Amino acid sequence: MLIGHTEGITNVSAKGDGRYVISNGKDQALRLWDLRKMRTNEEYEAVADISYGIRNYDYRYVHPYFLSFIASYLIVITLVFQLWAISKTKAPSASVGL
Image (cartoon, one colour):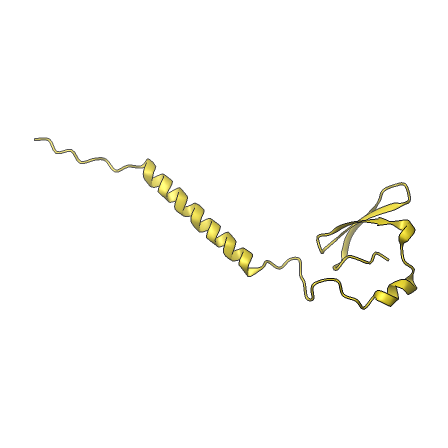
């Protein structure tokens, strides 16, 4: 059993020497496993009810604070670009010939 990922496993790859396995999960964790230290099913059942993850975590969810940060960034970039564009397009000066 690969005890340690808090979400589903997306990929497992063996190193080739029969000792190590690498796994990647939906919890954005990459784990290196030593096959000599794997647990039996009975050992897993003893700790199966322990939750190590964040309850109701969904890796596809974007936090509202992050969205507000992105919105603020885009507003600042837009204002900087507008100020730059205004400085490059100066209005023609009015000259009065007497």
